[in-house]
Image (cartoon, rainbow, N blue to C red; front, top):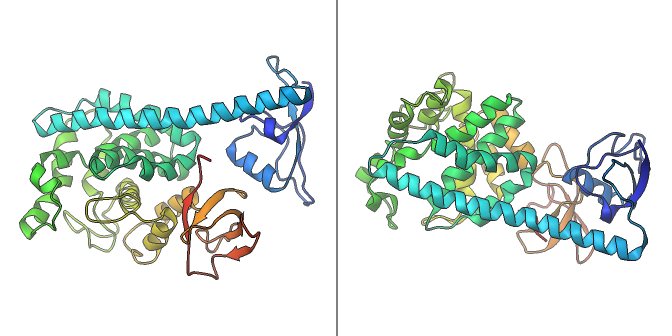
Length: 367
């Protein structure tokens, strides 16, 4: 197959590298026959690789001249923007449709699992292709409709974690549905309790803690959901140290799938703006889960979330908690949430593992 070199700015996702690419390194930074994804683009740009050898297929046309390059770059930029816009709109539409179903459940309607699948699975495909979508979920949410956003987002994060743990596709999709329906029992909680702005009293709090049981009752008769998933839905607020609910079971009695939903549920809740709590940075939340919540969650499940969120490609643009911007230069495997950062304005290199006075507040995905 014929090969040609293209400018890094003209390199499109999905193209195949024609030869090993080195950057003053002993081993290639990208191997021959690699299909380019977003992470590869970050790496190539970080190492200042300007010309990339790619294999041409029948539909390819080599763009020559300045005008051609400018036009192609514009097409790529427009396409990237459209992908982001399409996800945001699809996500928002999905939440609106889910809200209608959820309110129907509160009125006594049964769960239509076919409709739930039809809503969540197209978004699952997106997040499995591009894990950086995780960073956009909290910004797409809002306080008023938090519960509906939380259900959809938890399902998406569950799918990503399950895939990262190496489960086959069938389980990934089942976990997406289970995560989405984990809080369906909240539909049976009176609206005055669900949307109360003041702190809950003990009676109200006890009622909220019944929602895993309500969720199980609502999905129990659905043959399309595996029994392991039903158990996971019931156990998604259990903790390995026995501090969870509804049964306060400990390690050995909590299913791995229940732990996946628990971690996804906690992560999204802590990174989202709610009536009674401000959102936190995904990086800070991971540190909190690993440190202050140590012993409550399965280590492998937490590590899968760390790999999804913190193990970002070199060159990823970020914003720090002091509002300075920079890019990731090196990931410390012993402290993945605190990489080496090069500041945009000054070029200064900061090791966040040593300087703990600030942290990554967000990943810049849409600029």
